Image 1 (cartoon, rainbow, N blue to C red):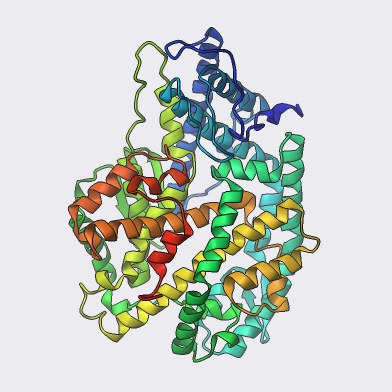
Image 2 (image 1 turned 45 degrees about the vertical axis):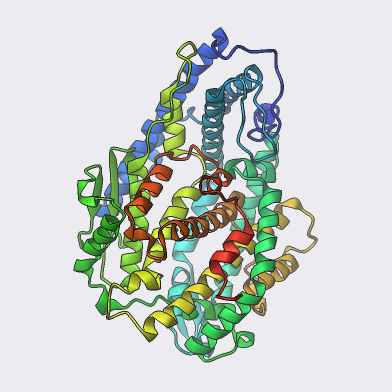
Length: 566
């Protein structure tokens, strides 16, 4: 493997844009035309592969057919090769030099003053390159990934003389009323964690070694595929932890007393699933009413779900159907599918709204804008694939969080008299505490992931204890500390999670400011969302809040979550 290959990621994926000879916005170099032809072919193959995989996943989910994706790579062994990645990068670097593209800082989008459309092309190639490198790594790490997945599926632990599946731990903790029994379950599962940890550590080490061989670092590549500046995100995480500390402790104390009859000082990590167990209001959300209620809510936004012929909603109750919700985009925007196996309850209503947000976003994506000049080449297929399917998932996740949380919004619940009064007030307090917990936990995970891969910490167990006890505001036990290896995210996935939560809160604040507490009752809110969705992933996460006059900031998040008078 060529060790110079990730000069490919020297700028990681645009850390510093080298300056080249003067270019002419209306022209393409002959070499670029050849490279574009090769890149268009690679992009088309990758898109066809994803379409085949989405179709297989859908059939497996809804019909129970085998879901082995390995055969889809037959004949595509060289698609994600180093040679393919170098081809994409050569074109990308050529455009950067020709059009004098620059970037203000690592993780910021490219700017090409001489030709704004070239900036879109560089951005699309950045997305495409990141995707190809990710697939290249996935193939190299397949054995380690399969080993972890297989062990997780088979792991069991013993607690109180009974055997349990490790994957059922959170569900078991949520359903267990007795605090001592929750502690026994949690402690018993630690042995399973210790069996899993060596495999996770092995994969992590293997990933770092592969990236070193490719000429880059774990942090640099992780930052590049999150399209974010790690230093800036670390600062955001720190600010969130500082700003929300007092309100978080107050909210958690209130909910702990009300739900579990204990003080915050007595609360432990194993109690969290029970504390935030779903308030399902089963009788208030019968399964036959789930879709009509979602349809009604969307209708008030001016979104006619029935008219969306490009969206298929499968709510069949079939024995072989996977009960978990799923959205697949077989063709964007023409063939979007949603699967849910509902039993009724607020959880299912939230899950349906969550998936419909994803589906509506896919179904609303428009083609990227054409170049202003007809004199230069245009490569819409590459741009369309990149901006429809690649890039950061944070915006899609933010929209899904926004819609799913409607079911916890007191203003939305007022439509249903059977879920009113004390129930709504109690739910509002729990929602605030849970949102603060989720936001702080994700902030802690960002800081911990950075600590792990920078190598500044002598003892990662100690670092995990310090960072996560601060983030969660709970006393950490030895059983908690034992999870310092398995409680990591691959390649800074926590960055996407944190950005999605922050954007969702800022988007909700913007909608409320413009259209009132019941923002979904305005057709204009639907227009605002559809305009945002229409862009696909053409925007980097930090470019989304400025659309409504904000920036990705802890202060605005705090204002959205702060209790009155805080």
